[in-house]
Length: 416
Ligand code: UTP
Image (cartoon, rainbow, N blue to C red):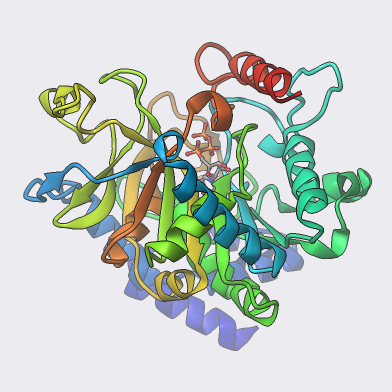
């Protein structure tokens, strides 16, 4: 304890985070103090300092050369091409080379559901939760290919216990429990605008999930990459938890990637209109990337190609396929952190809990698509919105349970 305390005191003094010492002193129970100390020593204070310094700089490189990216339209493939990709892909799936990663570590603030987003009841007659809907899809594929597809679910520190419990209580919705593995994503301290690490309402260090880009490092740290390698996994589909039409097992995408010899492939859907608030695939300084809606200039968003289609019209829907080699490489590399200013409850120096009226805290998040720039080329495959994209983001309006429910019902009526 003494050694740990000495280390802690030294670190906070060196990095100007003495408010942590005050917070520690305010705790009464020995166990709380011990936990605080333990957590404080997991923090990389140097990284916190760098992140804060970065927050003072303007984000995004204005000098980056942005160009449209080539894509392949799944619906326009010739019969021969389709059959060839399918045959290659099916072979891989049947050989047990595919795994699925679902990223369920987000906070789901816009939806406003109190539990993990996956536990949300979509409002179908069956009252299935999002987790059950995703499991249904994997169960269908299991039957189709006669193989258990390993499923890795990324949770966060806050929602891990509840997510795991939900699956367990529901008997994993009939999917083999041995094929499901949960792993937690990383977290980073939230900072005040002055760069001080905040204390949460319970007197602990305030930390938040490090963004969906944290998935690569968390897969590595959680031993999941090792597990995948033991299972001879070659391809990993990585998707979000909140798309109830996600198609994680897609032989065409796998076959296409193998045929074109790429290590990463992403699915896109056509942007509904130039103003739609979605990121689109592009080339950035010659490398595959995604340009966010906040980053793209209006005139660029409206540019048309020779076919009258948007030049930047391939929306990124967080449905990507990675070769294990790409996952390994990225998991060992640095992804930049993006800074968001959030309203965050905290405990002040006098021990009072403050709920600020205005955004007061810096949150740092890595974005999955920043990883694309780590490789020379990737395939973008355009799929149909109505077949593969029904997101649950907002409580009402666009991309809400209501719109997702309708899309889900329409799709399932169509394939009956
Ligand atoms: P979003 O960016 O839509 O965030 O995540 P969110 O947390 O679900 O919702 P809001 O913005 O708070 O309303 C897209 C996907 O990435 C996952 C989410 O769970 C979702 O599946 N994600 C996001 C993580 O797994 N970890 C994160 O840190 C952030």
